[in-house]
Image (spheres, rainbow, N blue to C red):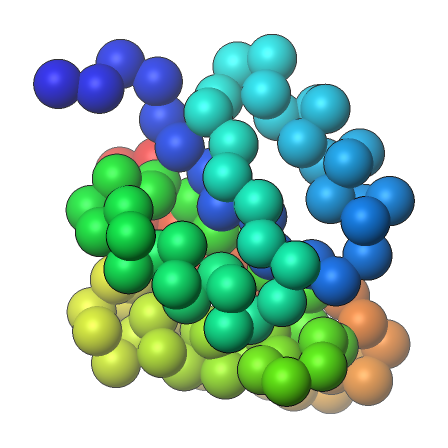
Length: 102
């Protein structure tokens, strides 16, 4: 059984990924992905061992909202409709999604 919780950070900005990884790796195992497609591949490769996903919303190829939509479809998490997120979508805020036991 794993003792350290695992976080997946998905962002196309190397600077943001580096900063978040440095902050979180003190206490958690961190996996990074540079876009939504790479993020979904990381989720597939690590099946049930990702405890938290932190994703940028505005990314090329596959944006963060599509990543979140995929997580909901495969029952990875239970997310509720977030009107604030919808209004703020264009401002590039990150969305944090986690399993209920994180």
